[in-house]
Image 1 (cartoon, rainbow, N blue to C red):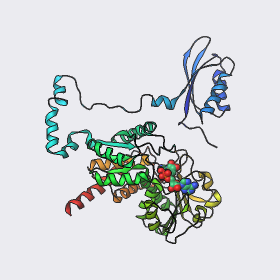
Image 2: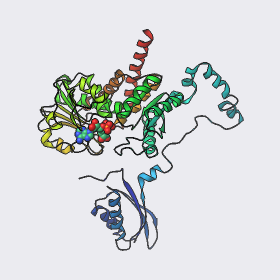
Image 3: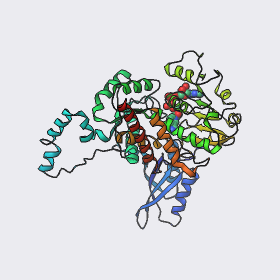
Image 4: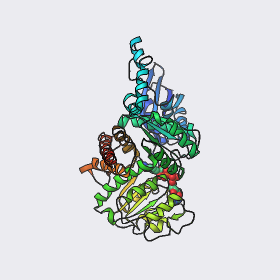
Length: 467
Ligand SMILES: NC(=O)c1ccc[n+]([C@@H]2O[C@H](COP(=O)([O-])OP(=O)(O)OC[C@H]3O[C@@H](n4cnc5c(N)ncnc54)[C@H](O)[C@@H]3O)[C@@H](O)[C@H]2O)c1
């Protein structure tokens, strides 16, 4: 049964009698209808009435209404106002631009802006590389979306995607000091997206593509990588792949099985699944069987697009052609990036001993983690209310920090693997079946990832300049 969490939290402002039992009556009313009370604040007190803010986590709009009604119908209570705390947090957006220089007088103005700035412009015109030294380019990333695959909400368009992109930018800053800016494009035409991103690239030292639907995202990323001299990273693909590879390395340490002996079933061959498969192949598993909504991906299957054909050619050694449930029999690892509720405990029971189950579909995983735990040795999900949360926040801030510090021009698998190893290593001797990845709030993660990516990027630059 779902439990109310802080993603949907309301504050009810109400008037109540100033009696000794008022607090107990109010909090019990919230509890009776399943609200999780998180704060009780008396904001005004008079001889005949108190004004109270009751804050509670709820499940839905209907649930919020139930709680409001339960309070409003108590004797002597009158609800004044109900606020949704999540919406309050988004009022006016979550980002702002703050100058780094003081503009106190004419002297400051003459250097920050005209006439002094002209000489800085001329220096960059003479040596374009100086843009990284003398402008925001050094530390700025564009978070680019077309709004076509936003969270689990689908194609909701660029304006509706903006709260997510603002949040992403806030995470970049909070976890790695990267200045990221949302760029939500009112087009879903790959040619136009590529043209626009190329045109705005001079301001940025990296492009983070976000929530662009597959298979369009593959083409857009590949063509931008060819055309730009700054790194282009589709987080839904590579951020996920980095964290999954890190988590799997540690999960296999828990059960003491080498990846070379593992048959891995990946459910979902979209943005996340394809990138996970590509990166996992670098770790030489015994085999990977990819399954999508039409069943196992194999060479003889009809209607394979370029991405699925590549997957078919590089996985599934025995050309298995059955269903997800059939693929799972005897498998060592299940990685789900597909759809909710595809498996029951009985399917996990058919896997090899000490099975590893990563059920990452959001918000509802491929299998209830409690069901999976009945037969699996290690279980991970994408959710914050279970142990082992596979969360891209572990990867992308530090990854871009490393890229920007190294002034990298491109991204390769070595950098992705270096980031995965760094995340896995942070766990160190705290490793157990319920702790295969560090907390997203572990302040060691982003610097460790950044350091690993910097080293990998500098290694690449040295190889490039020597050849
Ligand atoms: N860190 C995380 O936990 C994390 C990261 C990325 C994606 N995800 C989740 O993974 C899921 C997929 O994300 P995506 O961006 O790759 O989406 P996508 O739309 O690009 O791909 C979805 C894939 O799932 C397959 N699929 C759909 N229904 C299926 C079914 N019934 N059986 C088997 N396969 C099925 C589709 O054929 C497709 O290959 C989403 O739920 C997303 O929230 C989680």
